[in-house]
Every structure is written in structure tokens, then in C-alpha cells.
Image (cartoon, rainbow, N blue to C red; front, side, top):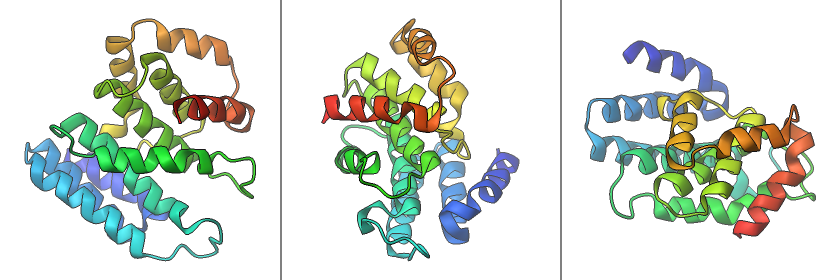
Length: 200
């Protein structure tokens, strides 16, 4: 596990910054050790840290700073998998509120991997917490993959997301994948807008 987390730090350094990468890797290690409360609390600290750090050259909505949004997405997935009760629901609601702006036609540039992390977080929360219609949740998961979301953290691994979808919504992931064909990124942006609009 430790070796995987060292790799994770290197993979996400560019998007999270070194401080966020180190704390995020430590949080994942705490979760793997069963120290759930400490791990989730540390992920929360990462969200706050990333929210305070400037993103060079970013002039869009300050609420959508890429590394803060990415940190929120990772934390929502961690809470969905490991938390109890309403832990993480505030961040889930925050991401739901940001999602329409992330895929808006008015955005000057689209950060597909970061947007994909948000789609994955929303989809997995929807599935694991039974908070969204299951088909729409699976669509979000598939769209996250097609947007090339970051798989740096263990809880974000595609194989785990596939297993969750197949267990909780049998057959839906395969059907949605067939529906989308070979399309990726820009070619699926309208589909992402449609799913988010239906959920919003």
C-alpha cells in the first residue's frame, strides 16, 4: 500500500501541489489502516488547504479552482466508501452545485480530467449512498472514465468503480458504454450536461 501511495503522490503532484499530494497520500494510508476518522479528517484538511492556494493563470469562477474541486471529489469518494451517516454529504451537495458550471457551454476552457473526477464522485456517491437514480449514477461513472479522470488515489480506481456499478446496477454500465461507443471528452460533453441537468 505504501508503495502505491508514493506513486500516487508523484502522479497527482502537478494537479494538487506537493502539500496536497503528501497529505492526500497520508489520508489514503490512514483509511487503508482502518483509521477512518483520522483519514477522512485529513482529506478535509486537504480540501481547505487547496482552497487557500492560488492556481496560476486561473481566471474563471474562483469556486471552480481545479485543485480544490479535485480535492473535494477525492474526499467525497473517500466518504462514500468509508464514512458513516451523513459524513461527506455537504461536499457532495457542493459538487452537485458546481457541476452545471463545470460543464457549462460558457466556460472558456474545459479541464476534462478534473471534471471527470467530479463526475466520478457524484456517480459513486449516488450509487453507494443510494442518493441518485442508479442509471444516472452509472452514466456519471462512465462519463468520468471517458473524460480521463485521475485514478491516482486507491479509492478512485476504475476497477473498483466498475465493481460497484455491476453490483448495484447490473448490466447498466455495459449498456451505457455501448451507447456511448468510442466517444470521449468533447464528444460526450453534451451528454454530461444532460445528465447533470436532469439531476439538478
